[in-house]
Image 1 (cartoon, one colour):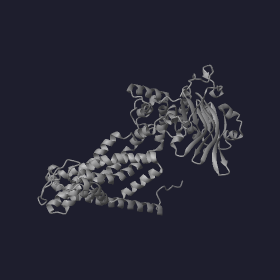
Image 2: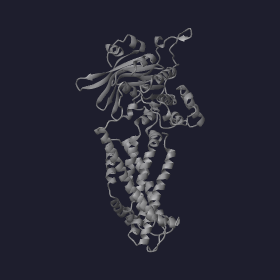
Image 3: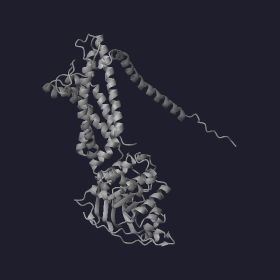
Image 4: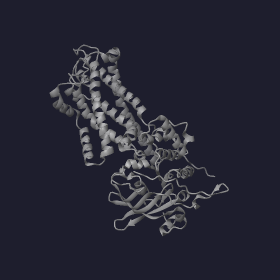
Length: 290
Length: 291
């Protein structure tokens, strides 16, 4: 009986496979290096001031004279939460409803196509242009406020939320909708009880991405929010500030201020991370059973 | 909408020494007409998928649609509970009457139609929810709120679908954890939980193994006493085993525009279709000469 050889033979195909595997590993490393470097420099340079004045860095007012070393970033944390929070309240419901219209009702209608095209165009508008737009339409008339910034951020978030939510609705298999219709459910009932629960984890991911991007936006906030140094808990009145604005301002100042800028940057990353984490935990309860 | 509720008409099953006689030989009795189709046709946009369907579906019997792929069996089935409404460009023509009422009349609500005429699909399609919530979905959208009442409906429906014993200890677990055959029985339970009058089944066994198929067929024979059943099947033996009446469809090539349109060739009592069909095309199909 001749022995059969089942071992892999060296061929051009297996060489190609190894080559491409190597390239993919290199690509993963190439992506990982800048990410790790950013996180490391944040912790290295911003960690000091945050830990030295923990937890006062997050709660103290910003020093009136930027040359004075030390905390804090309290007003900027409040400002960022107010502006992105208000923007989320405006953009997420509107965006998800828009996506439901586009995918579940509009389909290939002329109007739906126009809306979809406009949303795509809106995605491409640079944030500074959006800031200028809000400055002309709102800030000149009503003055600096967190709400002005929120308007600009909402305009930036809206097309992202619409786009990602529509994509997620498209992923809900049609046979689930049919199962619901076959039981005598109306279209709105089907959307509320079957389609949205099935799509919710993806929709939340898309919204989180939009919120995280908005929280880091600087240009539109410079126009609309101002750069106050004292606490302002009002959404609609008086100039406010934000972490991104403080990073921008302090980074170009004396070393003591630069340290604060790094601290603010670390705070911003931590804030986004906490937001993502809590949203994931909450949606875990809403999501349908897989 | 007034519907005369006829006495449940059961086909007599004479028994010899306690052993029921092979069901196929039992005479098919006339029960009241549920669906009456006359020259029914379905269009997808400009394309005519099926034409000239004239038939009567009888109450509390199993009616089977057989025929080769692409002959419009499923298309006709979906016309019976207005599922085509959800497809853009689909249109049903001719007459489709349900207990004498035009299903496509201006005052008829598609959701009310589908509440009374349920559907089980080819691929088991449970919602990604718990087993309990799958069954309770229909009753809930129809306004049943009480926990006790829902519990009762869930148990009754699962028992009727011969699934209760297998799932009673894990009602709160995901329905997607069930096997294919169990999922399909869950879908049947979900359909009968809203107490429909008719159950339409679109190749319910095509994704199942022979044992699961046998269970579904047995289930269909049990459900026949309560519901009118219309089933599309690719499996001729299945039609011969379970149904009282059989409709044979085939596709006809239109030489003018090179399109295939489905037509109803023959509709009769199942025993007749399988032993002595009137149409040559039916005979060729059931003897395996084509399709």
